[in-house]
Length: 299
Length: 185
Image 1 (cartoon, rainbow over the protein chains, first blue to last red):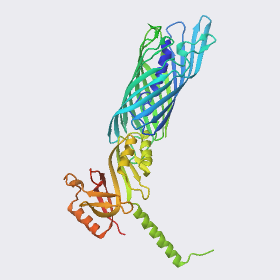
Image 2: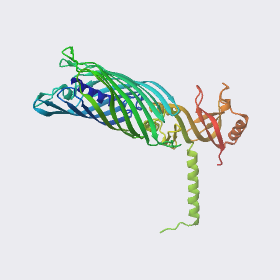
Image 3: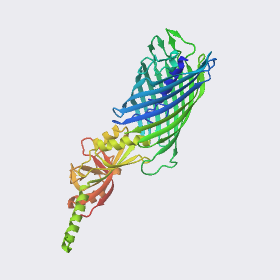
Image 4: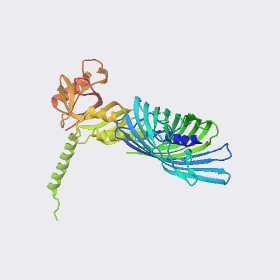
């Protein structure tokens, strides 16, 4: 159960700083903005988790609205701030019957720096590698309560701790298609004697231009892409007072088809993430799907 | 109400003609074409547009994604700063492969080499041929072009030359000549 909140926050992380620059939807990319560029990305992520193996028949729904701002300090270095707004609802059953518990508000702000360390440009194509480092900050509430008492950790809006993040992303991009590979590790720290397990996320993304089928000889154009991503996350077991918790952690892999329109000034995109591998420890809720919608505007 | 009589029409036509001629002369660098590597998504193209305007002072920028080319022009009276162009493209996150220019000016001798010089701002480009670029003796031209440009130098004729910019340590920027056109004044 405790892992759920963390998996949700990881899902948010996967998509938030991930693709603010380039054109993968749920994956980080090796691209960085130009010097002085601003990118605003507004996302909507709806996650549904169910399949509770216990009699509590829990069902969790999370609506996350991560707002990301990116600034190109130089053509190689960027700063990224993500402010997530969350709305969570947990339905479960006890001896008295079915009931809901809810929480909503600001989640944990994520601050990241990105630096492009490798670039090789070709006519109408590029190959780039970037490193990412930063932290999430416990800006959300981690001690919210309702009439039934303190909310369970998976309903809280924050992990309560500042958690360093490091990662790397590589991109090959041409006018016709794009490949992205990324790896991110989050070192979760202790707050109130509780520590979510560290999380490793990995992605492989492919994107193909479907329109225009034949590029115009001159000028810019709006481009439609289909996107297929494999988004994986492995999570260590959480610790409560230094004891590992059995019903936490595990390995999830999503397959994420998507559609995208990219222009000179904005990108609009949508994707659905389906779990194809769910190897979770103990008794945990399993994600049914994640629906993602996003718009990015640059100026 | 005054009517424009015959001789006034003539004066107006002459003035308009002179203004037109002056405008042609002012356009010393008529067109800039930048071959940019790494330009591979429409969402990334804005940076090129903005940096070329803000850093290099270019205007009327058009980006052609398929060709990996940006076309632009200089504001009247502004000389070309190749260093700023390179910086602009670097800051946009791309790699500059080549700069093609169309320059209007007169032919001069510069350090023993032929060059084209902008009358307005004195920007000059040494001239050489693609087939003569590897001699190591500096910019040189084949005999036909050499003769044509020396003749233009002697007669101070206005020329339009299209070529690709090359930079050499210790020398003025050079144009690898593609097209030479003699302009009637």
